[in-house]
Image (cartoon, rainbow, N blue to C red; front, side):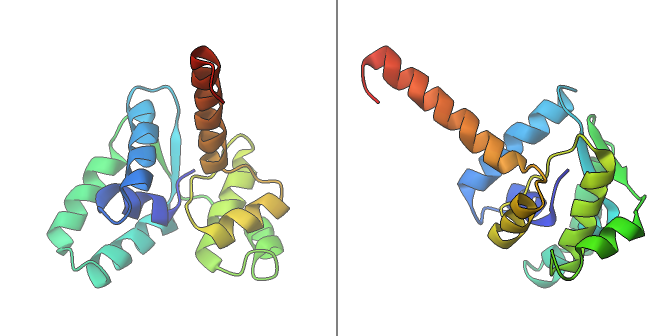
Length: 154
């Protein structure tokens, strides 16, 4: 499950480390190794941010969304469980859009949320909803540990 800030990081140069992490995830989706779920509200927020914060033209945004929506391994999610949404928002997850993402993730059962939003990640952790960002960090740490063991360093 992808969050708006992850998509924004992918199409902008605001944070190259985040951009590279999302690139890896989207490449895995394109290779059909994983499926990336994208709630429809993430697309709405994506349009708003690109147009109003980054000044990207509507035509360019339309092309980005069109390409993303037909990408192998990506599924746009329109269904929403309002009961779960209202169980999260606003007490447990103050941001309405984030609460939608979390509720869709919960309904999916197997999804992990890709986000770089610290407040959202902390709320997810309290709700025991997995964040793929945390898992990527854990994988990278394991690789570093294995590399350190091969070279005799830690």
